[in-house]
Length: 285
Image (cartoon, rainbow, N blue to C red; front, side, top):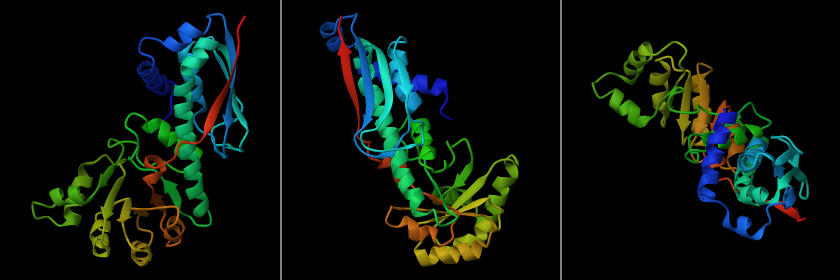
């Protein structure tokens, strides 16, 4: 998902936004021949994510800049740890500094938050998954960070799988067909490799949806008792996903109901950027 082409496209856009006509401060205050060494240092503990994105900010600013990653994506680090070392022309290092930090702080924050959710459910069989509640244009970055934190990715886009929610079902059944018949008709037109998931918000919706032969059923905003009942009712006939308002305080109890997947929008829409800093030393001739 996080290809070199994707990284370069997004990082280039960010650099263009930040310095559309150059970095006036660096160009006028820093002599062209000056070099710099900059250490990416952790101000708090966490899970690292976005190393290649961080490096791209400097590479795309000035290909003479070298970035050595000290830790790999997915690794835990402690406060004070040096995560990467940047060396090269000082003007370029200072120009790329903020964009590189913005990405790696954001991605490491997501990875760290995800790891906390994963730890809460480690004693169960449930997996933690992200959602499409991502920053527009940054989905590949943010979902890469979720994986680095030990989580799993849901469908990447609307093109990847069928996921019918209440509005879809309302339109699908307006002709008078039952939910089961309407879903069966739609599934019959799909390629056999396409996964189908349907969201329900009441227990009495489970059987009609399962009758259509769906692969995953999402129990949306169910109480813990209803989740347990729903898991028992599905009885292995489909993957059971729990969703809706999941927090660090509630995720353990949700996992213990026996669901297979817990999708958590907060992984990407509410993650705090991790406190990482770039300690720069400039050597002027």
